[in-house]
Length: 412
Ligand SMILES: *Cc1c(COP(=O)(O)O)cnc(C)c1O
Image (tube, rainbow, N blue to C red):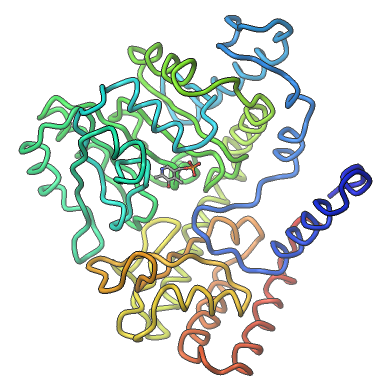
């Protein structure tokens, strides 16, 4: 990575970037929402496009000099529509949360009712959490998951009939099963609601055809571009043609100012990459690796919420070990594995402590980890949990994780 100019002007920041690169190279990244982009994506996001103001839409800008920006943004829109099979794409949202905010703004007035998945059951803050704009300004009813880690669709239907929401949201930040978008649409139709499918986590799997697509069913599809899709940090909204204008107006001037055209160029590059046969292989390997990790953990006597995963992530349920998610996430960091604490269904611990750890495989799969590596990762995780007080034991496990990192180098 070339940092020649930052080193000259700002050695303090340059040093931290170098240390962060080393941290990424030497740790096993199991945070399910993270990934490692290609150098092509990074070049686009670090380009001169960062200099350009381009409020508005391609060919309808408030600033001059947008002829090249227009080409790039239109290519990005076209690639998003083709990859996900939707009519219209707005590629300007700065993040997944902004994308969702724009859908709220385009479809509802403050006080209107939304039905979405509860945060502690795997939903997202921007789906109606009381501390988020979505929960502050809208009337939110939420559904959860059952003891098998699955959405109870009959219960979702019952709630929809009872509460008559304007918008139903499906899609989650921590859900390890296939989502039945068709069933959600049937429920939405029955109560006259619009359906938003937020595929932030599974976008890469959907793009590769390895998770059913929401396109035939959802009125709106939102996604992040930096999770399994492996692009720059950002969001995209896609919708049916009839909602195109409302969505575009909600993004700008509704809630954002000038678009980040360097990031839009990087999104375009990532979308092209995601349309290639190699990406399909990558996405298939993400799922194989997740299954190998889940199997490895169960073989070590640990529990997974809902048992075997069907996608790229899982939640390790620590309840029977007597340890907490907070403590074990810290212990994993000691052995060179990064992951986040997470609640499990009916968690006896608070959301700050939790009894679970969420684990995902998109980032390690990008590095080239295969099933046998995931089995070793499972053994390191189990070893760390069972021997969390044994300093020498943790040291040995750290050496094993470093060995895996060196076997699959990153950005060299
Ligand atoms: C990550 C995530 C988001 C938000 O993405 P940000 O880019 O962090 O704002 C929205 N929805 C779901 C389901 C997510 O998992």
